[in-house]
Length: 243
Picture 1 (spheres, one colour):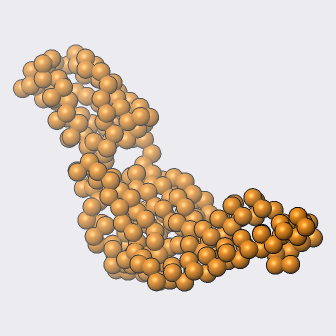
Picture 2 (cartoon, one colour):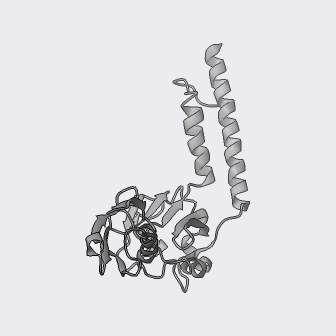
Picture 3 (cartoon, helix red, strand yellow):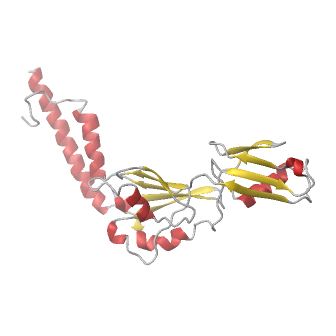
């Protein structure tokens, strides 16, 4: 009797999961999704940096005083986004522009250096600039941006091996961007299906952007069934669901 009860209970669980999957599939067709990529491009591109690189881990910084040269220094930006400056110690510098860091250093050095002295902050060696593509793509990871910063969202998806055709929910693609001016993260939900790829203006990316393509709701149900039903209640050998 135990051998008969187990498959009956499993069959009920699988039937319930199938019903849930069908319900989510129907529901997902009516859920709101992102605005088309071609329509979002002007709004997103307005938030691009003005061409000035922000500081990132791996950069080499030059700190130069015109008069009090004993404070001159070259410092690396460490993996945690900090740099150690002569006489003042560790400061977080990642995502600052050189001009913003100059203002910060003038405050930090105000009791050590004549504030009338000229201070120049420059990036003398650049770490690679990248964007990150995650989620339902064939090869998720970092994509080199290049110094010309002309990589588009569609190109980045292509360089990540393109989207997974059976599981990618392109109409709910997320683009996350660090707003250096306001010092906060901003994001957009975008309908990035191929029919929206040919617009007058592409979406351009900048360093540290993250693209996330989620999996479809029906794919999530499949993962749920596999992880929480089939593995927890394995089918007895020779017994099929519903028997």
